[in-house]
Every structure is written in structure tokens, then in C-alpha cells.
Image 1 (cartoon, rainbow, N blue to C red):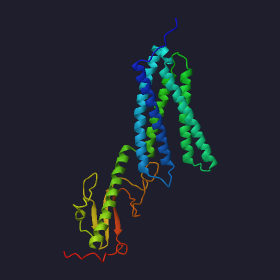
Image 2: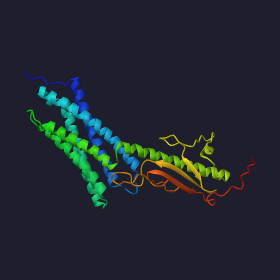
Image 3: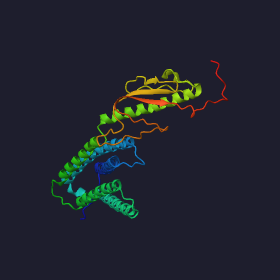
Image 4: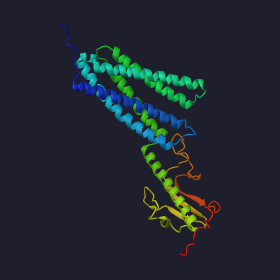
Length: 315
């Protein structure tokens, strides 16, 4: 009698689908992580924002760490099930997923090489571009090679899957640790976000001070005078200490805004990378060292001439 083909159980469907989805997430997270590292180490001066890179590293690290753990756990469960029931190697669901992964890997390799050749012929090869192409190529080739081997391997028990799991774990752990040397530790990142928010607060306060001077032709005595119930503006406080920013009047046209920063934003990363843009929308420098820093500003009356049509206040 002809043997009845083995059918997939709900458990088989869950494990295989969950395993392949976490595998794809792991690959996406790994490639994205290294692309962000390349962006950080070889910044594009025309389009470079360290904050965006740091956010990308944090997100891809989170995806990679959790997805890899889930993938390795389900791979171990599937491997254990296959040794218990070798016939499951011929499940249609398993073969469809393996061949689909091989197809995606092969297409990725072809497109990656096409992109490289196109940019080579265009004379637009840069170190950052070549490294990105190399990362995608190596990852896609490794995926293709692994699943091709998985299709052809015998049913005999082998330590190769365990060795591969150890290698993958070491690579993932090393990739995550590398981020501490490239963009800094989580503590450093939190301190930089506080400093970035402080700079944004100072930019906002400066803008309101200038508007106040334009309307009244005098500087506010204290920051609380900037509060406006109609526009809803309230002078922001330090995001960490909740203390008011220091405001000093030098003369009738000059003032200083002072704050204590936790990090340097000129050269703040272990890899010596620059943090964000040193200019705000008014083309004024906001680069700073760690510690107490004061930004001196002087209003040019010629840039803000008095509106002679405005009625004079009788207050």
C-alpha cells in the first residue's frame, strides 16, 4: 500500500512560521544595525544626523536581540522534533518556507551585485557604499548557503546546528557590544538626549526673547515675562532638574542663556563622531562642552526695525 504523506499539525505550522518570521526579523535587524554603524563611521556630510543614526541603532539592536533569541529557541524545538520524527523533514510547509527563503536570498544577491555594478559604472563608488553592499552580500550569501546545506544534510545527528547557533550568538553579541564603542552606552545616549532637549529649549526661549524685544523694544527682565496665555507659551524648564534656565542681561541689546550640559556635542562619541548639526534655524552656533555653558546673543536693531505704523503703547 502507498504510504500516506505526513500532514502538518497546528504545532508544526506555528513553529515553522514563527521560526521563519523571527529569522527574517533577525536578518533585517542585523543588516540595518551594520548599515547604521557604517553611516556613523563614514558620515555623509550632506545628510548626516547622529540622532537619527542613534535611534536606528537602538531600534535595530532591539529587533536583533529579541528576534535572534526567539529564532534560536524555535530552531532548537524544530531540530528536536525532526530527530524524533525524521519524516517531518519532508513536510510541504517546511520545504515551501526553505525554498522561498532560498529564492529571497538569491534575488537579494543578484540585486545587490547589480547595484554595485551600476554604481561602479557611474563612478559613484564610496567606502560607505561598498561596505553596505558587502554587508548585504555576505548576509544573503550566508543565508543561502545555510538553507541549501539544510536541504541536503543527512538525518544523522550532528553538532553543526549547535555550533552554528553558538557562532550566530557570538556574532550578534559582538555586534551589539560594538555599538557601545561607536555610538556610546545607553547612559551616554540618555544624557545626550537630555542635552539635545536643552538646546531645543534654549532655541525656543531665544526666539521668544527676540519676539518680545521686537514688540516692546526692550528685553524681558526675567523669563517668566515671556509666558503668554494666548499663544500658550510657557518658558520651558530643564528636562532633568526642572529648574529654570539661567538668563542674564548684558545690556539693552545683549543677553545670555546659560545651562549645565552633561556631555560634549562637538565630539561626543567614543568613535569621535559629531552629534547633529551645530546650527539652528537662525544659523547660530549651539555647540557646547560639558558643564555650565553660556550662549551670548546680541540683537541687531537693523534686522528688526521698529514698526512706525504701530500705535504707541500708553502703559
